[in-house]
Length: 312
Image (cartoon, rainbow, N blue to C red; front, side, top):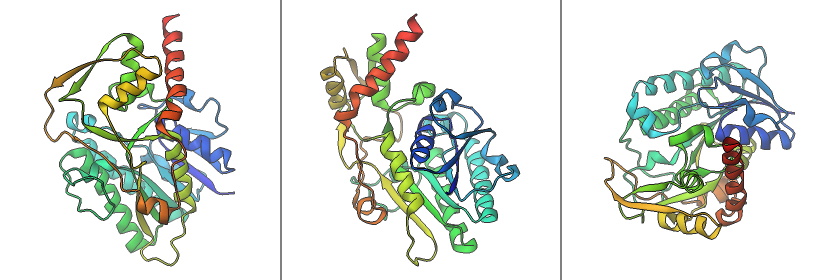
């Protein structure tokens, strides 16, 4: 049985990764400093818990076979407010890679589709990357460090460029949550949701449990003699949903969604995201299992129950 350490394990994506890996029989430890994550996200997950940051993993008593590194600030506005986060993220990444080298572990990096900014959609893994903000610089630097550790130190690394991830347990992210999640919250509160421009901008939505399944595939990935042992894969559905379409889907599920359009876009705003899923499907061997339309009802119910508890 492989031992897996998940940094950011009490967070939105991390908790689902822990859950899926436990169900698959892995021995899982969730590591989190609870900057945003909450232990309650793991209430039903039979994994170990360690209160610490990624910077501290070299001091852990256990050794691990795999490190899933998700313990990073995951929203561009965080970095705009505090560009020094870039240095913190890089230091954490170096520590993770040092630990992987010491233990002989594989690293699965949770990267971002935001690195593609400036490229036409659909976005392919072989496209030129030219970061335009601190967030994408931090994410791309982490990918580059993984590549260097694979090239120079023989550490196996798989970087997953996650697209627009949504689902349950995102409430702790507040204003940093996915756009469709924030639409749900606004509707449940009876608030108007404000949108930049005309609402025709699009996002490639992928359900969080699909992301967890993609992580599992990355753990099992066979490099098949490829040197260096480094790969990068998109993780999306390859389907673009406009903000107006998202609102209509929520209305079909009984929510009263009110939109306010025409707000000014901030500099370098991303109008469209769309994954080319060819490499993900044929090389990683992963095909998303969940349709957005299929999972929306239970995601809405999850947040409705939270709002009901808050009102009691």
